[in-house]
Length: 76
Image (cartoon, rainbow, N blue to C red; front, side, top):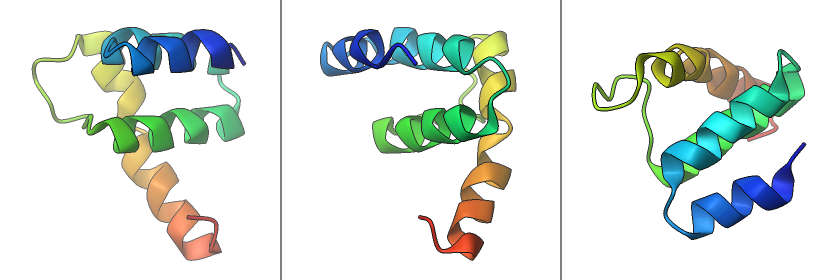
């Protein structure tokens, strides 16, 4: 995962860039997607935010399920 690029963008306030990089890099890996969902949650980004680009909203749409699953497994 391109952690340096993701955290640098997030720390610079480039939330969209950080999340887009995160999900692009995750490329279907469920553990990495879960990390991206946790990051989005920490950054206060929601899949229902209509200001987000459609592609990012689609990627974020898995997050409620992923985060809920983590809570039930005791990982969150």
